[in-house]
Length: 218
Image 1 (cartoon, rainbow, N blue to C red):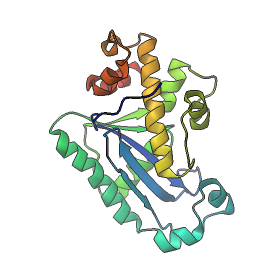
Image 2: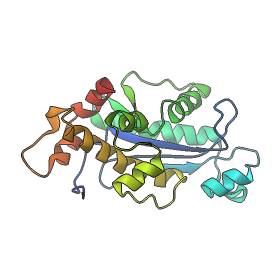
Image 3: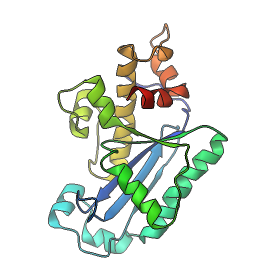
Image 4: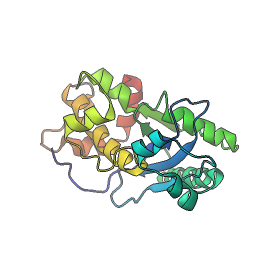
């Protein structure tokens, strides 16, 4: 399936963090990326200097080296402010309605990191910022026996050109989200996205109620 290019609502924000490990109590964030479905959106991406050496395993997995972090990593607060403002600018452009933050395994990893970082610097998460975990979507629709991003990308033939770099993961995630949304519609879980044409994805993406429906469905 080829998704048709058009300006899509950008109230769905995909987010990914690269970190020094998996323990939420010990890890340091070393890269942040956010992007939307909106055509032409360059998104936001930055490295964060963790003020420590990252392990060889982290370097091998992410291809983010200690040298890169020393030379290009920014202070954590600077990145968090830019990340927060990126989302707030989207919220302002919408005038009303919800912002939907989407991550894979977000409920157990990315969203706690996101909340902890904002709380650390005194930022409040508005009540209209909602959270959708594509891992839960994939488990419930049962498109594959296992539901890692790598398996879902393989299943949907999504090319993640630089896996474990935040922006590449975010772009791949946005495509996986669209395919999962399409499968939910094909399973008749959400009748509101059906059209008598081959372009039903247009309505999925353009229907502002669809992300809200996902939260209820999940």
